[in-house]
Image (tube, rainbow, N blue to C red):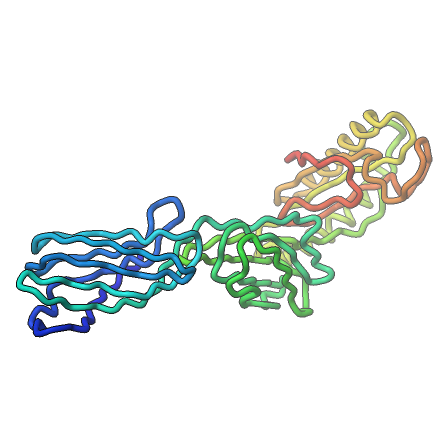
Length: 339
């Protein structure tokens, strides 16, 4: 909360000696649903009463009369909707022996609710196009973005929206920079200084590799195929040595089949094969967390009719990532299983 003293008085009549008859404090900020900004009037010397007359920026008026003995404090809630409001007016002080004094008031207050940022990472974050689109939930004073590359350099660090409308949809972009995007951090700040921060970590590396050949219906890694996994392991280890210190990198293995055979059977087979590949990498010495999932024929890279023997669809993906990766064309959401 921010509290400010308002002490300047414009006096009328011959009662300048009573300039300090009251002390006015302003609590200018409040959280939505937890009260309102407040004017606190502390009575310092005997007065016959006071009258507070204020006009809010949207035209609403406030007219409150009161009084009290020295040492007492009277409070007036300054109710208004979420956002900022400008108030003008003043306090008239009436003295026991006649006459009055006037304190002009001119100040701002703010009421702020909770902030939230909503987006669909698979649809609203386009790293290739260097753009992000999101909806701000609530009222913010400003929204900023920070984009960090895996080179350690910043591609962008600044404001992307100043005083946006409530629940605004905001699009932001950043300039081209060397390396891959490691972190995209969105920060919204409301009128009382509270922050909401959303951090996205879209960084990923798809490891190129030669596809394993499994026996029909089986998930055992054949000895003659092990050299393919050894080559992929070396490449994974190289990337981890280069980037592993920048974030908590994980390895994801996604298994796929063609559309020959029952859908449920293909899904189960692809899970077992992904698990077998993951287990091979662990046994070879990979220390990072490893996750696996099978998509069967439900994320075809080459769209075919059912019961089509398509070698390009019999594949696996080896993905180094921080967040759970997006799998292209997946018709069902993955449930990544940790090895």
